[in-house]
Image (cartoon, rainbow, N blue to C red):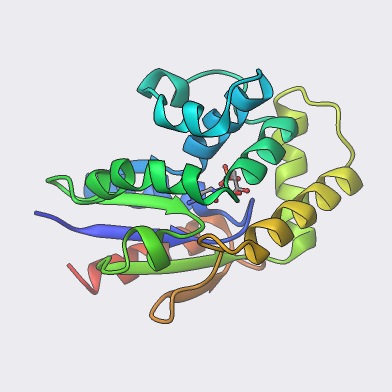
Length: 201
Ligand code: C5P
């Protein structure tokens, strides 16, 4: 069976949690496409050319430690604005999406550019304050020394860059189901996503 679930939205809205839960519930494969840009951004921080880094990405790069830092997130968002970098990464994402057995991809442009024909599209959001609080807990929980105000400022800067770039800006597809998780528990958000998938299976 070929079945694609596209989950887009801004940073720390709950896409990752929802994607993993949906993939687990239906036995689908999951690709966190942010990791592709983070891995590219990390190599660029190390001095590599962005396009060369994107073309040369390997599975090990996506599993590397140190991709979940604020510095790498910011570098990811800067390389993600380069059209040639995005173009180099399209085919890998599309073939993942059409793999046998179903796939969930989460990112910024999955429902609009990578998989415009996805069977299910969700656009997951939450208020800035809620997202900053969640990311603050995640970062401090993994030993990062950050303030909530700093996290909020970083998220806003990254979202503004992601939403305003010319190449595949972060945008809800016209046919995406909007899910605002600000006031939802994880279980409620996951249930809503699972219902949306069941309705199309
Ligand atoms: O989702 P995550 O925060 O890991 O993504 C890091 C950055 O990668 C985003 O801020 C965005 O600039 C970029 N990205 C993108 N398109 C995607 C996924 C991520 O441009 N599909």
